[in-house]
Image (cartoon, rainbow, N blue to C red; front, side, top):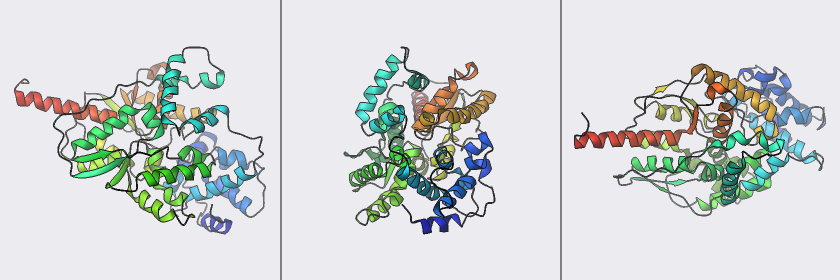
Length: 419
């Protein structure tokens, strides 16, 4: 963790202008300064100057932050809010009573995500048990388990590779949304990219990092760095939250001399899959099916990786579709790792605002590029009859279907079967 003198120096960059307020989801639902970046910075500053103790509302102020980083994108002074937040949370966690623990469902999530095979089995079982009586703590989350999708088949005539990438599987993506990972692989292969998945990779550590389990996050980071160290142009992934964490290994391990340089090299190679596809896939045709679609961008893809526009640019290349952006396309949906499990009431308030927009637009599909967003938006569609028929789908899955449609149409034209 940064020294308090460094944190105070970072805090001094904040000129209290309030540009962050309209971008902060928790401030928007409460109107409370303590639920805003500006208010939270003031609380951490008071803590650093020993004007307050760990009590005095600090726990609520900091733990209810989604860590979506939208305030950093909006800040004209370039304040690195996440460093201030992390310092405050580290102090909070270090002085929190031992009896204070995360809810059971959050603890289970943290214990399971490092074991993708176990997570996949648990997901399979949960989908089949969701109609049975469950404890209230679990029953409210069963709409998230509605997702099922077959694995896609590869396209023939894949061109010879001219580039190479390593594919980061991700714990939840590989266990719950394997069709999205496979779709992204096939799409990259269509634009001369060889895709390989190194052995030994594991969970990115995002959930543990944000839950204060820094030692676990560092252990996972080191395992991934070692697994991906040799070969390939880029390290690609299909999860905005994972990608942001992988890019920030250089910060996580900056104070470890044996790992800092390796983490820096690793982080520089991390790209979202859509960024690589946009760069190399200019000749790949994409044909939609006349649907009305919208996009819920991953806030970490937008605010940390700075690649949210790449996802939009790829989507806009699809012919025969109507794409209407959400006004809040780049704002957090309320998932935020385990936030929807720990602070469900606030999470649902943010989600319902999002679904009001969806309801007014009436799309056929909501496209996403992060597993937490996928589960959260899926939950949102079930909360009102008017959106129950809206399909939530990963952007890669949608685009690969569009690529297959375009490919099949071209083959039919070549064979003279279509007028």
